[in-house]
Each structure stands twice: as C-alpha cells, then as structure tokens.
Amino acid sequence: MEFLTPYLSAESLDILSRLSVALILGVVLGLERVVAHKTAGMRTYALVSMGAALFIIVSHMASAIYGDTFRNSDPLRMVSQIVLGVGFLGAGLIIFKDSQLQGLTTAGGLWVSAGIGAAAGFAFYNLAVIATILTLFVFVGLWFIESGIKKILSD
Image (tube, rainbow, N blue to C red; front, side):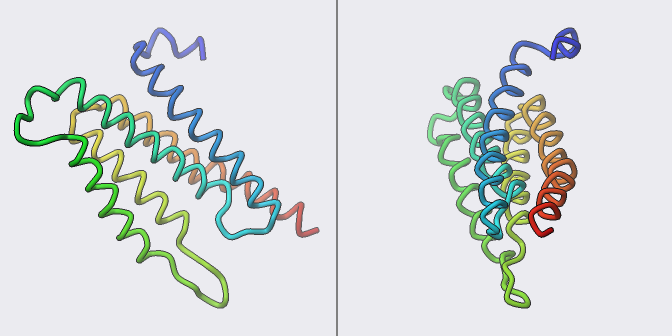
C-alpha cells in the first residue's frame, strides 16, 4: 500500500481501508457459504458487506459536511430511503430458474451501485471511485477465485 501513499490522501486511505475490511470480511463469510454449497457465495456476501459500509460512510460524510445545510431535511434519511428502495428493486432480480436461485450477485451489485450513486450525489468522489474499483474486483477477481474453489470442491 505504500506505493499508493503519494497518490492518495489520508481520507482516501481511510475510505479504502474501511471498504476493504468490509469486503474482506464479506468474502470470508461467503467462502464458508461456497464450501457449504450454498447459492450466495463470496461475491454476494462481499458486495452486501461493502455496500453496507458504503452507506454508513456516505451517511457519516454527508452529516459532517451538509448537516447544517439541510435545515428541514436529513441527509441520513435520504440515504436510508435509497437503501430501502434499491433493496426492493434488488429483490425483484432474484429468481428461481431450473431449481436454482439466480440474481443474488446482480442484486448485491445493484445495491452497492446505489451506494456509489449516493456518494457521488453528495460529491464524495473519492469514496465513489474507490467503491467502484473494489466492486469491479468483486465482480471480476472474486469470480475467478470462486469458480476455482467450486471446481476443486466438485472434483
């Protein structure tokens, strides 16, 4: 991480560490689910865990920066309503097809992207960019790792 230090501010490193810890812990839970042959795996758990951290960070940053600006409204309530609405939308993506549950990772990714949108809406660009990069890692990098683990377990 030292090679990134000259390019990232202290705030960006804090955001990266918070989101990374959430992502790693979600991966750990998802790994257990993969080993147990459950539908929701490493990517789904990583996205949901990181998405939750993202919404907390957005709420915290919005309160710190815009708390006095919103006299009759509360940015935390706005974020909570986004979470609720996208959760409902994500539930519609989860379907059973050929006796198998599908759409969990897509729903998790949609939920995280709402957090990214909320971060961008509050002008927390570092947060939005870092979360996007980590989400792409979940979609691409963890897909290869999870596929390899599933292949090993099925042999």
